Amino acid sequence: MSLLQDWEQRFCSVWEHSAFTFGPAALTVPVGTTVTWINKDDIPHTVVSTDDPKAFKSKVLDTDEKFSFTFSKPGTFPYFCSIHPKMTGKVIVQ
Ligand SMILES: [Cu+2]
Image 1 (cartoon, rainbow, N blue to C red):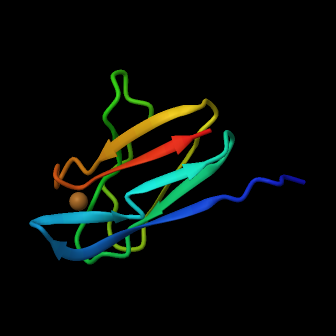
Image 2 (cartoon, rainbow, N blue to C red; image 1 turned 90 degrees about the horizontal axis):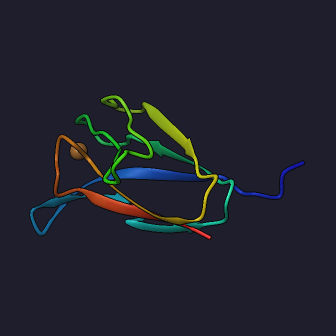
Image 3 (cartoon, protein in one colour; image 1 turned 135 degrees about the vertical axis):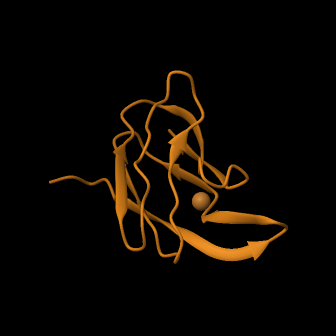
């Protein structure tokens, strides 16, 4: 049985300071956590790692589609939406 709690990230459609947002924008999780992003917006979004090489990259997610990634190494993993590059977030893995 895993003691790790997996997380759901939601895309927010709030238009604030000219940027869409990920909610929460910064998430701190233990190593081994699977983070799932769910598009609760009515427009498509993506989740793309900004690291090189990319740690993860989703396809274009339509409404209610999901993308999951399991973080198996500690570190800070910034990401953005490739359709709306001002949408950024990060996952901090400890
Ligand atoms: Cu987007």
